[in-house]
Amino acid sequence: MDTELESWKATGEWFDYLGFEVFYLKKGNGPYLLLVHGYPFSSFDWKLIWPALARRFTVIAPDMLGMGFSDKPVRYEYSVHDHTDMHEALLTHLGVGQCHILAHDLGDSVVQEMLARHEEGSALTISSITWLNGGLFNEAYTPRPMQVLLSKTPLGGLFAMRPQLFMADPLVDRTINELFGPDTKPSPELLRQFHDILGHKDGKRVMHKVGRFIVDRYRYRNRWVRAMRQTSVPMRLIDGPYDPNSGRHMADRYRQVVPDANVVLLDAKIGHWPQIEDPGNVITHFLEFIDRAEDS
Image 1 (cartoon, rainbow, N blue to C red):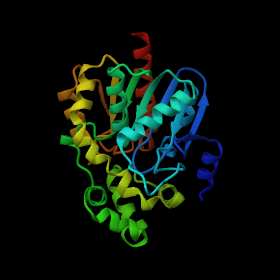
Image 2 (image 1 turned 135 degrees about the vertical axis):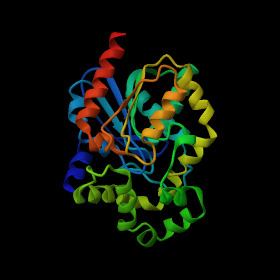
Image 3 (image 1 turned 180 degrees about the horizontal axis):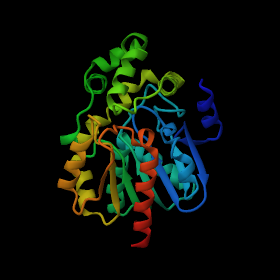
Image 4 (image 1 turned 60 degrees about the vertical axis):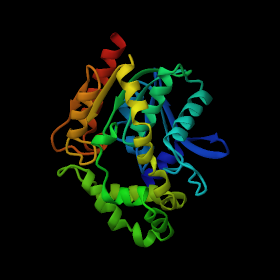
């Protein structure tokens, strides 16, 4: 495994979630901040903004089941609701009753469910939510063809049986590259790290199962959007507009749907991974939003 990934893993801890091991990092001092990563990678996505966040917050960043260093059971029903249950169980385990949240991609859906539960009176108090690129509104979301084949057709199970053929590195790289901006493409080193993360605990066997969160986005769209429209929790969307999945078109839809929408568009050539492609501006806009939320 890549030495930087080994170092990341060595600084983490483990949490027992119903008999499965969940990997997480916890560092810093100050108000709690939960980081919720996207599909199909891990908490390592936050590495470039991690030091700045840990200077201001007590940062908690788990890897969801099926991804990262956490367990990747094959006989398991992955869902947004279960990912939400895991995050809430981890926060309870750590004694966290209130936190800010920063989410990306699949993490957006997990936090939408957390927000819906918050509006129903859950024990967790959400201080603020910052969304990065993700499928907040399924009607505006445009997943890549490979993602659709894996997660919404029977081919996903067949591909999982022969990952060395159907999910070979060049095919995965092509999909990843499509999501980055033209001037911020992932380096060969970052692509190798992505593949190390995917391959850890034979993770390609379950990529299609984890990816079925797309179905949950259709099923629970109104529940989640209702919570976003009704909540008094401060929210901001920081969006990389070049992203073909959830770029400028998603930000436009956010403005249409969410009252008094707080939206920051990054440079026109920033894509799906703002925290990797433009970490400095993500930190600037995130901290400015937190300062405003804490003063209100």
